Length: 439
Image 1 (cartoon, rainbow, N blue to C red):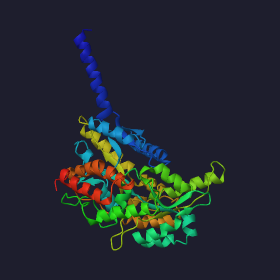
Image 2 (cartoon, helix red, strand yellow):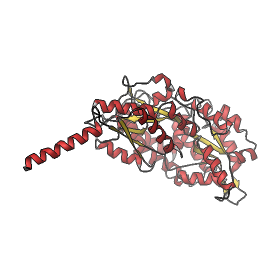
Image 3 (tube, rainbow, N blue to C red):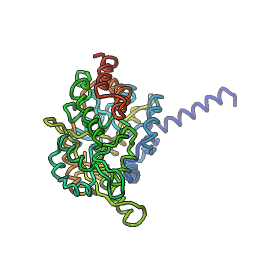
Image 4 (cartoon, rainbow, N blue to C red):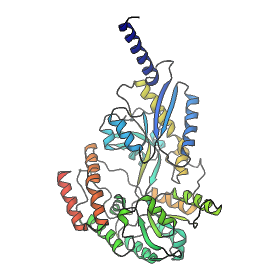
């Protein structure tokens, strides 16, 4: 065979192979690629069952999934997205940097399911700048928690706090009771929070009249007395010994270590899923598999400043749709079918396993909760305090991401470790408002 004819033959084989794997042509098996994460301990088993039930009804569509780690997965996805080769479906929530690539698929007017079957706030959190880029499987909550035994020893009515919330002054008064040496001879703190990111500042700022960091006009809101007061309050928790002085160096693993060692009366960030996780640890202690003292977890709201609205930090996560530049319309349509199945009522078990309220009407009451009744009730109350996402443009969202990465995190680290005063931090925010936002 002549060389030119041979090359044409090879190219033809490559083309046919690409079509069979990506276009979903008539009679061919179309492969839809899904990248996801360990949403909870048993989620991969749930995912396999979802895939099995889908493929049984759609013999021409095959689902390939990759299980990413929380540590390395986001960077791997960013690289794939920026190179123009993202998976068809990715677990997470819409971000400005995703939409800016032009590879996210707006699901509006393309779905086969009724969006009204989902919680409206959850749907809004899967939207961005007028487009719907995914469907949710749960509404997450990042709030605070407590040690049930220590709270009861201090005479703290946790169910009242769960129902009615608490103010900054009430929280500080209760937290101060824990500043002592515990029975093991270790220092005990009123409050422990990881200091390697800006979450503590965000939680308290939201509950001090700053529900959104950027307003609908695209202006930064962290330039006035409210954010200064928030940073001063955090400094007071450090200066009065309620929080460890080394908070700036505490990561999530160290935070949980202090909680498990009965060295923290209250801690953040906490999620409802800690309830079954802590209970599983208690079981391991009881059976002699690990050493330690049993503990019970209490889900708590974030304290709010006197006179301000109580807000729970939360949002939605689920599956988003992306497209490669050469994907056929049929392949995109098949990918939408897969996405709809992965977020259907059948997928609602993930929310229940995470001790979160379901977001799909068809999943309500379908799965058994594994959470203590008082924490389940608190989770439902707190889910109702989650705000819709801020209505800002993709461009403003990208500026906010830049402000968070380049300014907030290093500046807040300076406040926590005492290298920068709250006043100096405020000045830096004001400067960034000019250089980044042009205000």
